[in-house]
Amino acid sequence: MTSAPASIATDATPLESEVAKRADFGQVRYAQSWEDPENLRGAIRPDGDSRVLSIAAAGDNSFALLVQGAGRVVSVDMSPAQCALVELKRAAILTLSHEELLRFLGATEGSDRLALYMRVRPELPIDARDWWDSQPQLVAKGVIHVGKLENMFRIFRTRVHPALHGRRTTRAAFEPRTRLGREEFWHERWNNVRWQLLIRMFFSERVIAKLGRDKSFFEHVQIDVSKHYSQRAYHAFVELDPSTNPFLQYILFGRYLDLEHGHPYLAPQHFETLRDRLADGALEVVCAEMEGYLGTCEPGSFTGYNLSDIFEWMSDDLHERVYRAIARTSAPGGTLAYWNNLVPRSAPTSLLASGAVTTDRELAVRLHDADRSFLYRDFHVDTVVDPEAAR
Image (cartoon, rainbow, N blue to C red; front, top):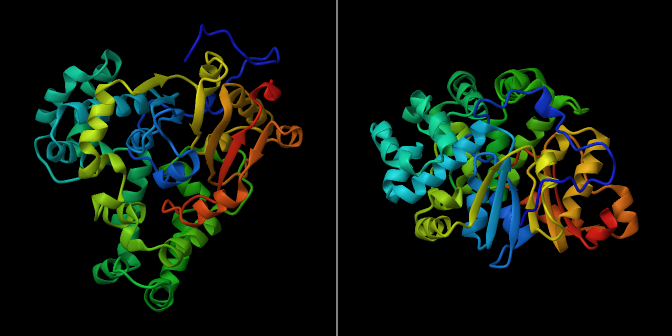
């Protein structure tokens, strides 16, 4: 899939990450993947012939792609901490029983995580082993809870939300209802004045930059961040069904109420399949900047791409250059799936005009409307028709 690391970029300036120069990637930022794997299933439609390049983040959606049938997944991240997290989850899946896995990761209660880590440890690559050996306090907490973003949600759940709603109201929000019933609940019991005020204050750019993400991630943001998330909350509670929404459940309870509706790698029905796929070497973890890694990839390397919201960290110029570099590594007909969180980014006009790339807006809107990870403002599904034309 890869060749010698000679750049395939067409201009003289090598692709370099802008955000990597300004943000600290030495910590776990995302202990869980906060994009809905069902969007990837609907967009990429992985099968045994699929070769997917996936942003690693916490690894959950790279695992999901294997569960969904992808033949091979390359999981890439610039953060050594995120790569170590993916390697730890992979080693745990290969080593532990399903019950032990849930306990070790923190999906269920447990007091023996350090003992379980000693069983998992021999399966780790040396770099990941060294990283986790130095972080026993994170292992003891359960690693799905130790990200910076998860800590922000913990602060909201324990310090802010109790002033907005009591336990009875919070539990009631997750009872199955019709669309009309959810709207009535929203207006009558949930959307009170305290909620309207504090949700706008807590989920503001200033607070998120300090507690959940990094201020450099907001460099290209030009919208009212708190208003955006306030509107997306209505979507989560009314347009979607909270009773089957693992993302909303984790934010408000700190756990998943139903593993079968959560990340596929945690669901009992997928455990043996995923373990077999990992044992067969179907997942490769690459710790590198995406921009640099693309220069090592031959044309036709991939048939699908899970790109998370990578483009919104980039300037307009770098966005187009990276998009072209991705398209050049695609097989004809390859699918790019990616989210916009706060910054609008889509297929470059030049590639659309030339016919090198097409976009399936109808499918993207349909998937976005059903996206249980309600935080994002948009979702995109693009097809690389002619990789040569992207050169």
